[in-house]
Image 1 (tube, rainbow over the protein chains, first blue to last red):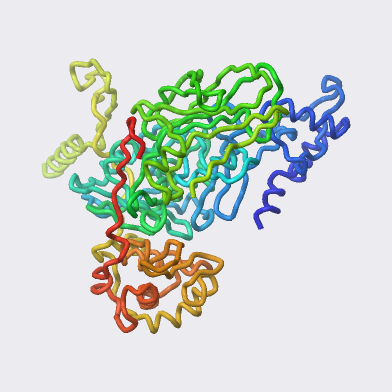
Image 2: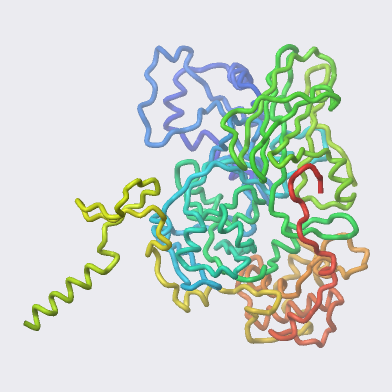
Length: 421
Length: 202
């Protein structure tokens, strides 16, 4: 069911008009593929490489006039990787730190609801002086804030085979500029009780998904976001309004938020008990693991890139839910020696941070990897360190191990999966 | 005379009303006077506590949406049900996804008592609070008709699943009083997050 939809979204049939104008000249399909290859780090599956073509000389034909809505180049084949439960951001195909909104990862528990913004309302009640209802327009009338921050699903680690892309390993993280009203502003408006310790956030999807959140986070930096990268939230990210909790596991950032109940205890909803909890040592189950620990991944070179001998700019992303990235270190000899990478300024709090590292590859087989260090002094662990801390029965949430890429003599780059069970 | 007096009173009441004031918020304002005499604009250096935006929520709209159930039982509605009734409903509305008796199918296995050899995380070996069952079933099940179950049906299904996980017996009635008293076997294993950042890996 998912696949035809994906094909439809990215097929050229959707933009026939523009294409007809673009397809003025014709170029052999192989040339098109070669062109796509030159954009470093891009992976275009053969099946998707449709014969988009450019005129032999673009200076000799008039191009299309200005349009009402811009389009991605037909030579760029960006897509999320979908499964029944989620779709993943193509980290290896992106530049900088902002995730284009249509490529933001998705994880829903009752599908994507369609909500009429004129009928939307947010109810805040419980331990408040005055229970209140806010329309979307009301929310937009309050003082607003914008903030660039990542959002990551806490179940964001896949392993198991060498032929895996960054997108497949940890594509459940994305970054946007979020705009909205601080939840503290709304808490003051309703007169939230100083005795309250938790609040329930509830979405208006078919799962009516709920999470309990400590009031401290609500007063501190929680936001009711209605903007994403300069426009209204995408439906897949909670249109028309969502809870945004910088640095906290994705699931707590309740989308399509309709209700907040202020309380003096957690509600123990299904998503904070039977899900989003993890086994640790001695049979214990860890609960309310909100913060996303520091992590990084090299997104180039990575599978399925074919590497050429000589100078390589190693590129990747690092982030921490506990603050700023202080340092990223890169090893090009399987972890024997570590060197500091260059961080792209400005380095933002709880945000994807781009790192780069120049390396001249001599053609010998080796392993390259990165590790993030955040401002709390936390260093991204190896999988073995996580096993040592949590035991072999450790659950699949909050796994942020150092990710290694094997570079073969023939230039092929493979993920190095490690087993723990 | 009386008219004049009333008019004066009206003007006085208007002057005293906040919504008629011109106010600007400027936290960096160096103005000594908090009132700009030329324009009669008040300057404040702290954000107002409230903005007067939004309206009071009605009891009806809160009631329509306030469906959550807390571990102490707050939020549980009137009604009751037991495992025998629950089994009938389960067969009709749940078995297609969760297996004939909750042993799992296209979707999650629900049954597996603590100590069984079942590897899946189940209600019996993993869920820490009995009230979560009622809350979750009522708000989102069955998958093809979420939120369609009557409260008695939810109590019955909750009872059936607790019974199948060997937590209560088949005749025990579940209602607003008895359900919160059911202690789940896994609860004792739950601990709060102990990760704190810093050098230690947890």
